Length: 474
Image (tube, rainbow, N blue to C red; front, side, top):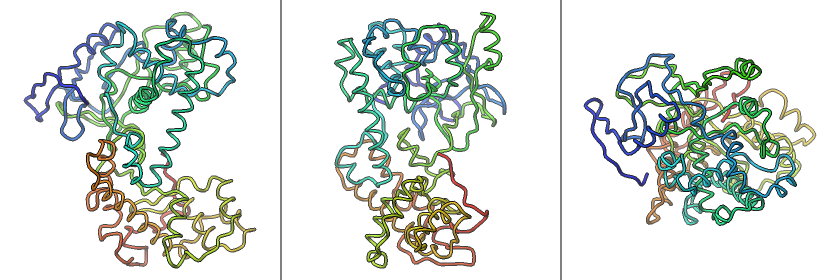
């Protein structure tokens, strides 16, 4: 990620170990980290930097135990008096509860640490990449060739970032931070987005109990994110099974707090599967499809078992305009209003070898099958609508969407000097290799071959295995 350092090839598994983060080991050691599991940073061909250990792990083993004080969290912010002095207290007092997003506040704190002379976090800051490969950082020309489902979520990200940047600038009285430009804030925002871990908010509130707090009552969301130095070198794999927890339960912490006897607290990760020595150690970032991984983390998995073909209501409207049979249809505007009012335009997707989502089945039935606008509620909140009336429509819609993804990939391939963000997106949708190949190995333009169970083109996507289609939470 823009840095070089001494590397040595380990004897086993062709692991190329990195030695450029020795200062990070030392700084964490000063906070009480012992690295008892002998974790090492290495460059791996398939992922770039990641972690391995010279020892193996059994199912149930702890793979890392970081001192809580090494995390950068709301507690770090509220206890940093020099950072708090950068804010206009009167302007902050005028804030109503629920205006400020915590991720944005944490991003600003990361910038503050970066600008601080002799920052105790310097070694960690040097380990954070200088750039990120999320689609957000595509050029304008590249963005023009991205699918609608990606663009829509990028627009939402941009609105959040700009709104919170303006908000934070309005309450600062520090010249250095006020001079921070939007580009640096975007970098910090995605540093937090791609590298943070989850913390229980009630634990933070307990540890801050009895202290004067600047931000805790002004946040619009829970302060459940924290930056975890060194731990953020772990890469994601859909097959990894890991769990995180604090070394002391919330209940035990509460008892210790009442007695003023809080002992050392650690953030720990455990593996549910064995890990061989010298192999890369993966963790799970959660159940995410490739679109989510690209948007939030800047990468995708070539054979992601949690992947699905995601759509928006705009995609369905574009399909209507492009389909000669559907183009003449006049769809009652009350149907669109009903879909919007009940959030039925969310979680629209197909799954390889599985069902289409419940909301997608409902939207297609409401728009193309049900003619009585007074029956919309019955269709939406009753049993899963019959698939037969929408089977052909859904097949054509999926093929339309696949063509869009392949067109996007081909258009990006023609552009000179792709950014890393656009390159990753193009590779994700490359015909014959990426996402679309799993849905339609015979090509999206092939005619559907129906069987008693469904359609081979979509891998039996309509086969009814349950009474209702299962919605994936992502």
